[in-house]
Length: 151
Image (cartoon, rainbow, N blue to C red; front, side, top):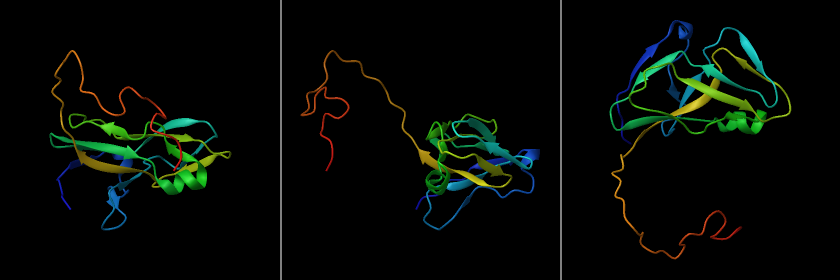
């Protein structure tokens, strides 16, 4: 397992909340908490940016991905709208989580509730090489569903 040091800063509305934490030793994602006052209700079909009260400084070559929590998705239909959301290494603003309620009932979000996971990942930068033709493959130009459906 590799580790990278990430600078993290709290905003005033996150005081008293835990920093992102990994639930188990082998967890890939650290839980992000809702840094809201009190609670709020997210109606079915509604979406909202939930603040975390955190800012991070990633080293060059790394991104942070905001991903849904599976328990919220299956239990409440609550998920991240742009999953995974990418936080670039040069972004210094507050981390926010865009939640949407795909369920049939309102979902109450409380201060300190675990609302998403943050995964830190390395990335590569492409150097584009424009060519007249691409190499041929068995799949060719086949798009969605072109490799078959089912097992």
